[in-house]
Amino acid sequence: YGVAVNKNFIRTLRVGIVSSRFNEPIVRELLNACVDKLKHEGVTVDNIELREVPGALEIPVVLNAYALSKTFDVLIGIGAVIRGETYHFEVVSDQSAHGLMQVQLNHNIPVINAIITTNSDEEAFARTKTKGEEAALGAIEMATLLKDL
Image (cartoon, rainbow, N blue to C red; front, top):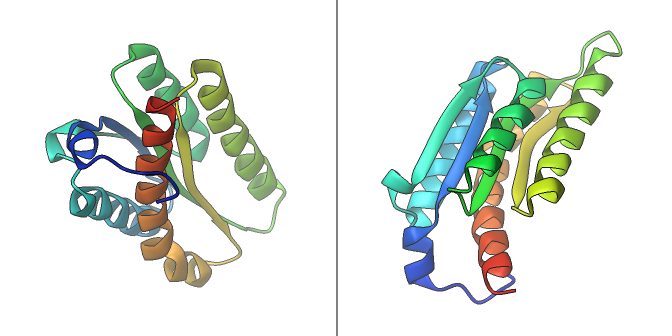
C-alpha cells in the first residue's frame, strides 16, 4: 500500500461492489479475484456487498445509490468491455468511466474502476486476476487515505 494501513480498519472496511453480467465469464473472474484479495487482506465477508447489473453503463447508477446510502467506505465497479466492430465500444468505455468518476467526486467516496476495456476476450482473460487484485488493494488504500484526511 502507498499508505500505512491499520489492520483493525481493514476488518471493519465496508465495500460496495457492482458488477455487470455482460461478458459474464470475464467479469466473474475479475470479481472473484477482487473479493478473494479483499478477504485475504482482512476485509470481513459480511462487510462486502455485491450487486449485479446488466452492463457497464448501469454500474454507475447503483454505485451512486450506494454512495447516497453513506454506508460504505469504498466502492468498486467491475465489468468488461470488449472492442467490437462498431463505435459502441468507445461509448460504453468512456461513459462508464465518466459515471464512476462522477460518483466519486460528487460524494467524496473512493470509486475503483475495475471495468476493463480490451480488444479481445483473450486480452481480457489475461488481465482478470491482476486487475481484480489491484482493484481490491486500491480500494483498501484509498479508503484508508480518505479516512485519515
